[in-house]
Image (cartoon, rainbow, N blue to C red; front, side):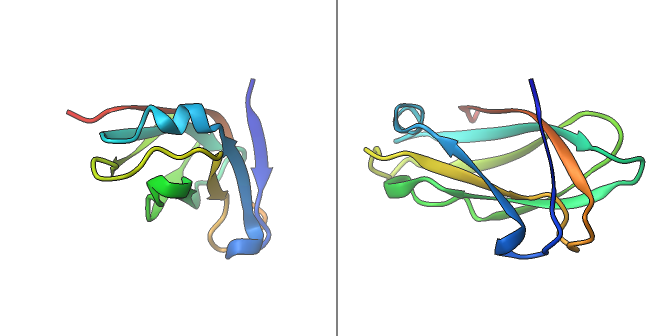
Amino acid sequence: NSLQFRSTNSGDRGEVSIPIIASSLQQLAGRKVVVALTIHSISDEAVQYYVKCDFGTLGDCGRHRFEAGNETIDALFEVDFTRQLAPNEDGKILINADIFGTGRGVELFSIRARPAN
C-alpha cells in the first residue's frame, strides 16, 4: 500500500500529517536513529518536498528538504534522541509534497526508523 498526495501551498497549510503511535516513538527514546521515507514523484517531473516531525517529549527532527524523481528512493535523515524522554502520546511526521506549492506530489510507500551506527 502507498499514499499519494499533492501540495498546493508551500507552507504549513500544504502539509500532510502522518500519525506515529506512541509505542513506536517510545522505542526511539535514548537513541540516535536514522529515519527513512521510501518515496517518489507521482509525475514525470522531479518535485522538491520537505519533512518535519512532532514527536511530543522526544521533540522534533528539524526540517529536511529532499527531491523526488521517477525512481523510488529512500530519503534519509538522522535524529538524536539520546537525551529525550519517551513520549506517552502519539506524534506525527509532516510532509509538504511540493515546497513551491504548484500542486505536484509524491507517493509514499513507507516510513522506517533504525538505530544509527
